[in-house]
Each structure stands twice: as C-alpha cells, then as structure tokens.
Image (cartoon, rainbow, N blue to C red):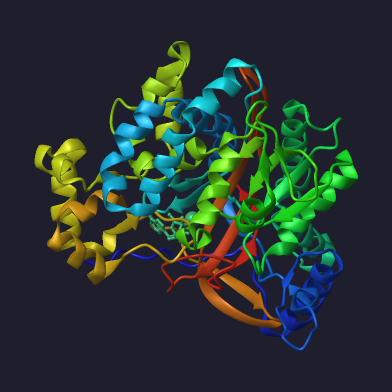
Length: 494
Ligand code: ADP
Ligand code: MG
C-alpha cells in the first residue's frame, strides 16, 4: 500500500527569476559569516584551507509552533533521562548484552564500561566526577499524527550546532527585506554558538584543571570535512572563556597521552592536563582501526577529565536503548518518582513505534514485536530496520528490510524495528557547491540539549538550540556531511 503524500508546502513562494539573485546573496552571506565546510581541493597545498559555503536551503521550513516549543520544553527531561540511564550500569549491561553478542562494536564499548569501573567509582567517591552532555534529539514531523516523533537521540558527536546558528542568521538576513513574505520573527532564536561552548567551559571549570593550564581536547577523525563547525566551538571557547582547545585523534592520544594512576590526571602530548574530552569521533567502528584507538578510549575513560560522552552516555544513546525505553513501564524507572507519570507522558508524546528483534522477545511477543514483524514483512515501506550504528547510511528499508526479517535469527538482536515516520513534503531551493536546484523535500529537526553534572550537583541542564536538515523527498537517509542533505532552519507557523 502506498501512503498518501501530503501536498507540498513552503514558507514562501519564489518565482524562477527571483531565485538566482537570492542564491548569490545567500552564498556571499554564508562565506562571509563562516557558514562553510572544507572544500578538500587537492590543488591547495593544504586542501583544508580551501572552503566553500555549507550546503543550504534558501528558505526555512514551516513547522507548527506549539509542537516545536514542546520539543524545546522536553529537552531538559531527555538530558536527565540520559544521565539516569547511563548511571544504571546493570540496566545498560542487561539491555545491550544480546546486541553486544552479535555486534562487536557494541560489545567493545560495553567491555570498556566494565573494565573501567574501579577508576570511575573511585572518581565519584572522591567528588571529582564531571559529566558533560551535548545531546541532539532528532525528530521528524509525522504528518498522520501531527507530532514530532523522535528519530534518535545523539549522545556522541552531535554535529552542526554552530553552523546551524549561522543558518538561522542567514535566514534572518533573507527575511529582512530580501524575500518578501518571509517574517523574521517566525525564526526562533538559536543559541548553539553560546550554549555548547559554555557547557564545555562549565565542565572544564568543574574538572578543577583550568587553573593548572588544563585544556579542552576535541577528539577528531583524521581528515574531517566538517572541521569548520568544530572550529567555531574552539573559537568561542577562546573568545568567551579563554580556554584553549587541542585537536587530537585517538591515535595521537594513544601515542602521547600519559595517565597518572594515583590522581587520574591525563597529561597530553604537549604536557598540559586534560580538562575535557569532547568527542567528534569515536562513534563508528572505522574510528578504531587498531587496538591503539581502543587503548586511548580506555585511557580517557579512566581519567579524571570530563568526558562528552562517557562510554555509559554513548551506550545510553544506542538505538537498542532507545527501543527498550519505549517498552511500556521502562521509562518510569529512570524518572524521579514525584513527577514520573507526567514526565513519562510528555516523553512518550515523542516516541514512535519501536520493537525489539531479539528472538526471545519475538517468542514472547514482547510489546507486540511478533505482530510488528509480520506487518513489516507485509508492508516494509511502513518501517525502518536499524543496526547499532551512528553516522548515517546504515539503516535498511523496503526489500532489504523484508529479506532480513524473513531470514530472522540471533543476528537480529543487534537491530531494532521502527515505525517509519512520514513527514510532510515541502518545496525547497537547495544550494550546494554554488549551484541551486528546486526540489520536493523532507526535513528533520534536531533539538540540542546541554547538561553538566559535578557529582550530585547539576550545573547545566537546558535546551540549547536547534538544527534542521532537509533532503530530497526521494532519498531515505539524511546526512549533511554524507552529501544527502542541506542545512535549513525552522519557520514557526500557527
Ligand atoms: P544515524 O545514527 O545513522 O544518524 P538515524 O536513526 O538518524 O541513524 O537514521 C538515519 C536517517 O534515516 C535519518 O536522518 C532519517 O532521514 C532516516 N530515518 C531514520 N529513522 C527513520 C524513521 N523511523 N522514519 C523515517 N526516516 C527515518
Ligand atoms: Mg541520525
């Protein structure tokens, strides 16, 4: 059965003759305000020095104001939920063990959690535990229900925060007399450029290393194309907090990092103590090409620096945990008893249908899993099959999804089955590499949340801005860095 596709909408109508001059304005604004990505042009001695405007949408995406504000309002609750789930290691272990048995990467992360328990407990006991969350909860507006349904909650390497704030400024510029009919007051404030560096700085301060010359380490992938989004955080850390950032790969840390076993202080290759490890790598198996990278991850986890994320936070952000939390009765366990019922009801406003594919759950028909599998085999277009992976391009759809479910078996323990969210179709002008194209599109909203806890004291817990990514309606996946999508912003309508 084909789903009915709602009529294409857009925040404003543009005639073909209007578009090119507006694209010229937008690209110049982007270049002049640092809304850029590395061009990787091999003609340059250092290809990273050549930049080009980030892929962008000329006009913002209409979203219902009330639902958008509800997604902002729920973000601190998602932050505390991640923190509570991460603190319950027996829950993480029990929930992830079947997936870990099938998926070596999940198994490795779980192994790292268990191996570092003594140091982590000692750190907590000494009153020096600092956790830092820079989360992004991703949603699509589900046209049939009118709700924002959560695609996933990212606890590691949530990217594009800074470029997204610049995208909001770009649409504000386009709305200030350039595109008639576009109302700048309908673009919600987007404080990522302040909130993300401020949370990192708060964690650095709480770590106690700043006075002794401690630095922030951005853990990066070699050859990152989105380095300018990351550089914005570094620049802001310097300008707002006079904090220095070192960009190091896991291999650099393995080679030159030294952990003082007595104090837990990790000294970096340049001799500075590490105050914060902020990961923009480490979320995919490709980031661990050898044992050295795993050794670095463990070294960081044993250290007394603040980590964004800890291994426990990373595991709390897995798709398996997302699915398990949607099982009736599980959520309440992680919420303060006094407000558990109301909090759970609010969180559940954002949950799509999620089912375990663990053969034991299927046999028991836990949460209706067996019926969902039968339905997915009959109507694969209404579902998404997801492995324990981050970074885009890993999900299965359509015939591939059907074939995997028909085959069955233990391997499916490492996958979850999810209801396919059906967002409304918009018309957008997509600008990539200086060229524009008008297309029917789908958008995904991300809400950032920042959280800092120093032992039992929550120092920061807030909604910290947003990201909209827009892709052509015909593509399944939506990564900007992967080349599928462009940056966009929300336009709130009643
Ligand atoms: P990743 O960790 O790889 O980013 P996601 O869960 O975000 O994994 O899935 C990648 C992309 O696939 C999303 O950005 C979205 O475009 C699409 N997608 C994922 N889940 C759904 C869903 N339930 N319904 C519709 N599209 C989805
Ligand atoms: Mg995603």
